[in-house]
Length: 541
Image 1: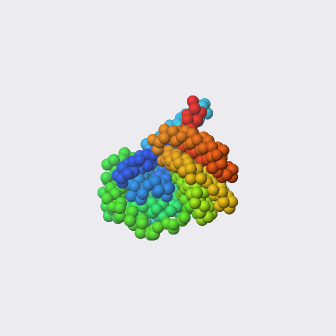
Image 2: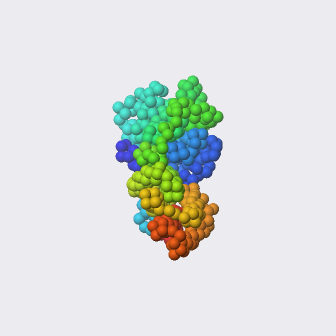
Image 3: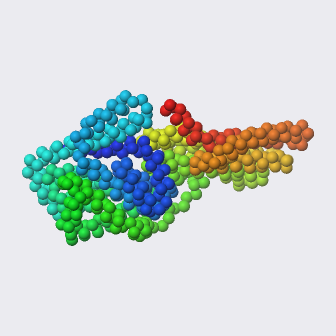
């Protein structure tokens, strides 16, 4: 029994993780696009959970989405409601008793993984292996349960479980420990098939599973922001309120409910699976109209707002790190948002440094150095995080972009370094009294305006996948190169005419060269993901 349960849990884990690797990025985009209202979110939640075979994984992902600001609480509520229906697909599959085919399915998966060279096909093979191991575990558990009927102590123990409250508590505790309501219901199904567990008791255990399934999301939200905690509580209150109502319905009309389920069932295994599905569907139908009130209840349980942090000055991560909910399917999204913030800091700091160069504002110079320290912190912290998540089970599409993200961190950090170089020039100019002519100031301002537009378009291309500016980026990069040559020529003419000092000329030349290199780094950022996708496609070919 223990070995069978181990195989079942391992098979489900392998299958769920492999599905997330193969389709995680696509499923994530579906979650982002089709959850604009509660009803469409509910449908997505049903389909999503049915595919990855885990409401806990779906809910944990929703919590991480809310934490990252990709989804609001009302959208999350719809997905969470749907996930509760989608999770019943596992028990339905188990009830069809596919155990006889498990060895063949497992062999097919292993042979595919061993002899197929394409990485994508190997990932699909992992799903098949997980599916085969899962049903092999079920077969082992089922055969061991048949022997249990010959052990009076086990039969008497299970027969003594007649108290509805104790049965509900048993389901809650089992699911909390196993971290999967699907597994608990599958065990109940097998026990019922072997006549080791009464069907009325099975119904109450399923009700307990509803609440126990909330533990994964609650644990995942503990490190997150307040909205992440609220999303987990939406799942919790939905299941608690639904369980209390259904507990009362079963207590008052148990025989009628059982008769209704039997109309759709052919054996005890199908009865348990159908009961699980009907309970979840009824719960969603009952509570969906009151989803706004459940969201408000969750907000009342976690009042207030997150403490405001000045992320420009403080050396802290906002979207990733130990204080943020981690989920493999949204890890790269968090990195992109953190890089977007880092790029904005670097761009603002460059403008601050250029302003200091022209105005000689001492406060601006000091702030440039302070923000540069923060940018350096982000560089190291994001790089360390990328190394860490590269060792986890990320979706295949996200894994392809990891290399590009390392380059983006470096390019943003180099933009920050150029801002510091400009601040050094401003400090030198202030201390040595170096004068820059009005023409030189005007030319640098024109070049800076082009660089600013290029950085803005580049960030949009990278962080928001906005490819509408692709041609603008290429054109602007060429214009900046031409402008840098023009400025260097103007600088030489002013020097030969004696219109500026050698010190001012050297400073001007360095700033113009630095801005041209900033444009190069911005262009690298814009085309980083495109280049990574092209390299991945060539590697697969």
